[in-house]
Length: 130
Image (cartoon, rainbow, N blue to C red; front, side, top):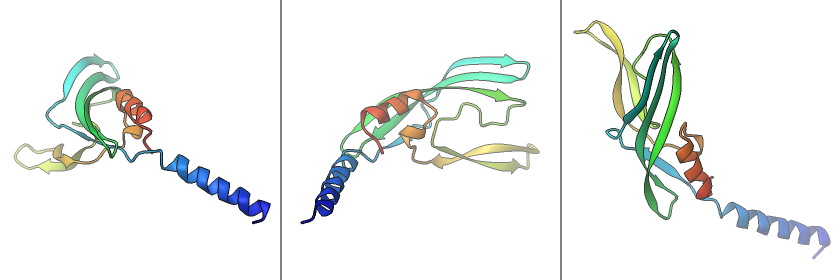
């Protein structure tokens, strides 16, 4: 075996052993768990803080944790303020009220690495999520 082939084999083995140590992680929000911790109206909009319960799995085990969120909203409220990650809303018109609003449609998976919650991001880091 040539030295180039040996180096390639060592590289491939080390690459696959590192790649396999990362876990496929996903979290799902409990849509009825949201609790507001902060609400402050300002001249430009509002500041909100809220928490939601998430069930997260790394492929081997599941864990329930609380994800804390905080965000600023500018302008008038539109119904999407303080939403838990992964909840799906659809913009629709309600004829009897003559308004457009967001209506809850369901729950989708959440990549904890891309969550707006630092708590979910920290969990993903601890569990080596890819």
